[in-house]
Length: 228
Ligand code: DC
Image (cartoon, rainbow, N blue to C red; front, top):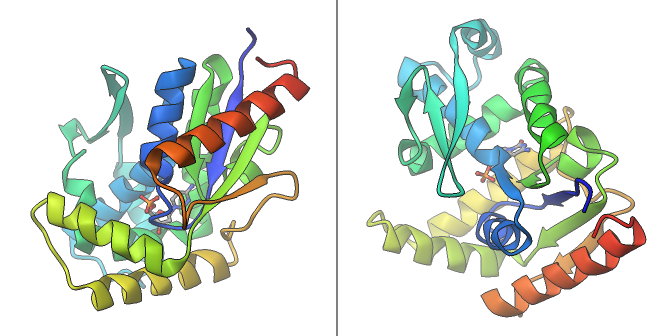
């Protein structure tokens, strides 16, 4: 089997990470969660006390960042300047800082090569917002994974509860809608479906149904490219 690159894009809370990780495990690929890489920058911006609107200040910080991806039993871990920040980047405060930092072209350019490098030597399932459109435009399989904002808010709420940081539904929904708007209206690599991506709407699907549907798309598309 030759290298296969599976790009999964879609809005926050569509279940990309969990599904992409499960698909990578099933296919024997590396899973690259690019949102976690952006979150690492968002965490740094937050910790520095920078205003998320301070574009110049954020760009000035980039040379001081050393971001590494480590794999522990197939699980991606984020290391920032030598410190494991895998859990910290999930704090709700980090999300808004990340979304602002991700809209800055210099931040995106800074991370582009790192993401492409990872897909050069390994078969990957890579998820994010611009993987099929910008990072890996020639990926063998592209999937646009989505679900209604309400379904995504519901899932996110359950996830926050599990993590011990519960939030009210209305607040979660509002934040998701705000983030959707920012991620899809920014001028630098906005969230959009690649012309050659298969759309998978998981609003009415449970986890197993979503995974089955995703693997079916990979089989069909991968075969067409003789990658599987
Ligand atoms: O997938 P996530 O919610 O962990 O992503 C966090 C933020 O990073 C989100 O606001 C979108 C942004 N992001 C991006 O702009 N491009 C990517 N490839 C991945 C994430």
